[in-house]
Length: 133
Image (cartoon, rainbow, N blue to C red; front, side, top):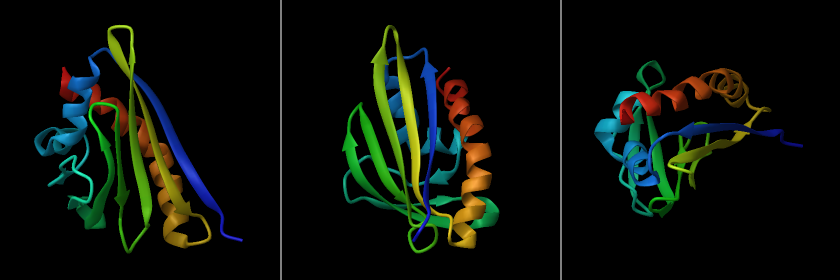
């Protein structure tokens, strides 16, 4: 049986959902908090993210519902996982619910990614606030 795992982060950002949306969908902003790439929130848009020593990772937008949901594949042909950014208005800010799913722990690459990204994603997601500010 394949052991598939999920990484989740829950971060409150004191900014409107439209502002957070811009931070997660605009290449210049995404490069500041995570990785350079040609992301665009259009279903079917294929793009790459430059992960430095891990190379350029192929991605494809699966869902884009501005300013509520962005979901795309990550590391097609490698980790074959999915990233989901769900934005929920909360008071004067936005609750960002992030999920990285589909990491196969039976595959050594999936296990390494789950362990490393499990520790790394919370800090990466927190950097969005600094970019928005």
